[in-house]
Amino acid sequence: MYILVLSYECVDVLDREATMQGKQAKMGSPTQERAIVGDLETTHSPHRDRVMFLLSMKAGLRAKAMASLT
Image 1 (spheres, rainbow, N blue to C red):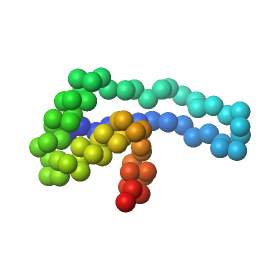
Image 2 (image 1 turned 180 degrees about the vertical axis):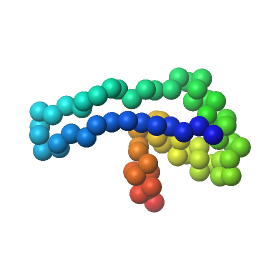
Image 3 (image 1 turned 90 degrees about the vertical axis):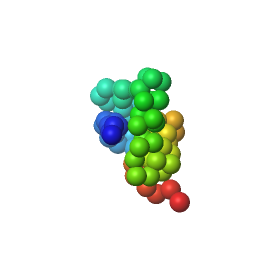
Image 4 (image 1 turned 120 degrees about the vertical axis):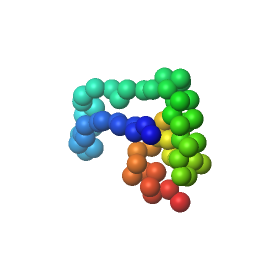
């Protein structure tokens, strides 16, 4: 199974001139994305896992945001 890891640095949301520091998160290629989606079909809950992966890739949602969806 593949694990998607995103890194970011927090900034003060009240500081209007603050910018994100650090490196840009790396994006997977379309080939890598298809391979991961194909691999997710072999998991215990393939439909749920595919939706979670695509939400993180296409919508940019983090785990906490996805967990709060109803």
